[in-house]
Structure formats: structure tokens, C-alpha cells
Length: 347
Image 1: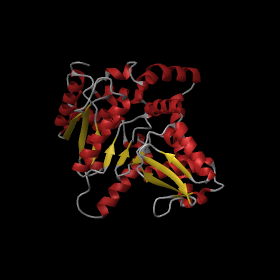
Image 2: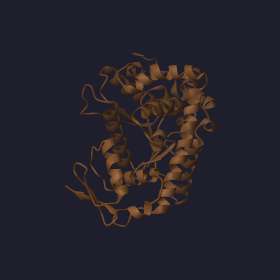
Image 3: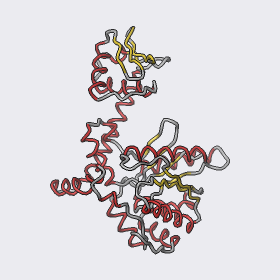
Image 4: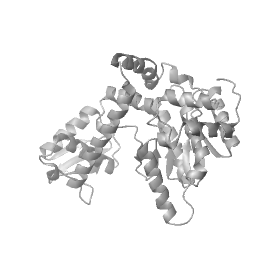
């Protein structure tokens, strides 16, 4: 949509909230939000503000409008709206930003926008996402927001799963996007719309009288996700002869349960010593999945900067399982096995 005639946004928000109620949202995300709300209010004082990512597309618009309609009465707090202009689509990206600003101005919401200053032609999806998430992290810290609401929906689950299957992800990777995700620095990302299909969201918005922005790259062939969305997902659903997207969403739930069980089992083994070294004897006789998970956790704990390939990781995993003295290059340093422990030596 190049030119959009804005409706009366408060009226649209009220109408949408009657169609898209909190009861339709993911219970895990909403329960966590309530728990955080109760925890903060029990302490006394004013609860921290929440933040909400808003691109101007249908999904994030729906989440924004519902939160505006029900937020003050249900949550008793306000929130800020974060928009990131990737600057990859020229005038269209700037029009997205203006649209978002006008919606928020009509609703009386604090609107914060950021621009990707180092954007370059041909940037990958991963690069764009990294820049966007860094903007969210920076602005949340600046405004003392712990919680970020994101508008991923059920179709996103199927797309993500198909993309990650292509690169060989395990349970943790295939369990994304999660309804609740806690980052390493303690922030919470909540995705309450994972229970909703894209078609349902679009229909509810139309019935409420809403308009939104369409990103042309979402239907093009440039990005892997766009190709999955346009070509693979429809063919997959047709071949399945059933609701394949709902099936993928249920598989995601089961995979998250399995991933959480493995994490709990690993926690019980306490494979790391106080110095952050991986004690190999504590994993002896355990399934391969626990060894793999322990090595991933060790690498994250050491803040290892490496471009280790899948084959390199497999070779390192085999080396630590043998338990013999080993010195393995990680690019910026070395993984060293000595005395039955795995430690990191900087190069």
C-alpha cells in the first residue's frame, strides 16, 4: 500500500480487542507476563515499562492495538513502541516508519525509532535481524524495560522450522520461536500470538477496519524465508492434506518440552566446575545429546569467538568424549583437554 488512509485508531483497537481476546493468546506467554507483573507489584513502587516491537505489518499492528485497548485496564501500565528502519527498501521503509509513528501518535503511545546506519545493499536476513535486535536491546536498557513483546504467529513457526531443518538444527533450534525467551542479559521476549494463524489475524484486522503496511520482500524470492512462505509452505500444506501449520506448531511445543528436559538433566549433572571448565567424567556414560549440549553450553560460557563449522564441532565433540589430552583450534583460541577437563586458552 503506497498511500494509506488512516482510520480512527482508538475505535479500530476497541473493535479488534473484541475479536482477538487475551484468551486466544499463548497461555505460557501470558502466564509469564502475569507472574512478572505480580512480582513487581508486590515489591511496591511503579512496575517497569514494557516495550513492543512494531514494524507496521499486520501481525505487529494487531498486537499493538490489542495491548492499547486492554493494557491500561488489564495490566495497569503503559508501554513504549519500538520501530527499526532497516533502510533496505528506500522510500517504502521510510513510509513504514511514518505509518507507525502516526498510529502511535493517534493512540497516545511513546514511539521510539531507530535506523540502521550501516545498512548496505544485499544485506542478509541474519544481518538485518542482528541489527534490529541490537536496537531493541539498546533501547530497552536505556528505558529500563525488561520485557519485549513480539508478534510472531503460528505461520512463523512452520516457516522457521522448515528453514532450520534445511540447516540441520537440533531440538533447541527447532523449538523456536518460543512463547517465552529469556536472553543472556536477563531480558524477556514474549510471543503471545503463536497460537494464531496469519489468516485469522488478517481477517480480524479487516473486520475491525484496520489498514497496515505490506513489505514487498515478504512475497519476493530474495530471502530464504520469503521463498519458504511463497512456495514451500503452500505446497507442503497441500501435500499433507491437513493443517500442516498447526501440526508444526504442536511439534514445536513437544520439541521445547524435550529441550527443557535435556537442559534439566544436564543441570542435575553439574558438568561445569567453578572455574567454568567442563568436567568430562560427569558426562561419562551419558547420551550423546547431553555431551553435545554440554559442549554448546561450555562454549557459550567461555564467550568463545569462533566460526567453528558443523564438522569442526563434531571433531571437537569426538575429542572430548575420548578424554585424551587434546588441543583444538577455535580460531581466536584453543579448546584444551587436560586432567579430564575441557578449558579454554586464548590464542
